[in-house]
Image (cartoon, rainbow, N blue to C red; front, side):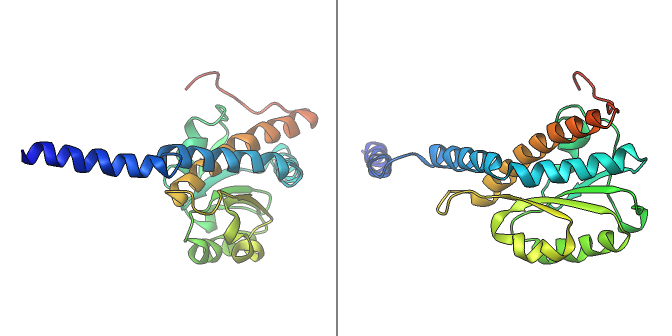
Length: 194
């Protein structure tokens, strides 16, 4: 009897939740899709950042990737479009004046990220940060370009949803970066599959 009662409670809870509308998974998916839709609206900034990064790269600058988003660097180092001429960012001292740092900022990490990114900007490097739209102002003085990712208010798991949107922005940036390089007569090394 206790098992039947538990099943009834569980079924009632699920039924009540479903009566409210979309499931949490659907709401997360809708939040990430909304963030990806916003990528199109912010296209001009992304393209300008990619053009600036391509110009530095073609001139001999090093392309760095890092961030407070877990897995952000490994995504670009090994998966996002197969772009290969990258280095993992560890410390500002390694970054030179003609270099580019693409940085994924985790929701809630703006203060620490800003301090770290100011050091890179002080090295005269180009800094392209991707992260939560709500933290754009906090990072504005530390970056050259900020590519905001906006998930709708009330999205469950907003932090991870924003991180997923940031990876989508990274993939879009990769395409724009490669296009910028080819317009300058250079094709960066891309692997077909990793």
